[in-house]
Image (tube, rainbow, N blue to C red; front, side, top):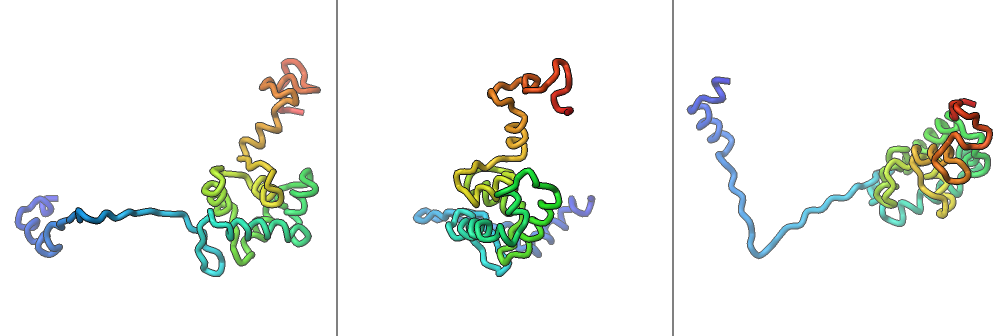
Length: 170
């Protein structure tokens, strides 16, 4: 620490490093700096998530592959059969596509494109297949399933719920 406070060392280091740097501002021109999230596919192409081509590629994959990818078929036609095994299969299939879709990348793209952070994989697949399907987070999906049919927030009033019993244990 004493070396760093030494006056001679400070002078020497400023000479080696070129002294202080001066910044000049041009009066007649102003630079604008922007940034954008880019998605890189398996072929090294970078695309902005808001571009139609990226969205079209994702939608095309979902719409053309229900026969090839069982997990997509389950989500679109037999959602009650959805399981962790189906999720693992879907993640594996997505990673092997030329676009190298990953759940994390899809979530980031949906956040940028649709303003929906942390959309769950179920709603991303359903939304790609049918645009009228809502994008939901896992929390929103669970809340919607637990909400009584009449829309009230009192879960104990669900049909079949016992007074004073835990409504989550069946």
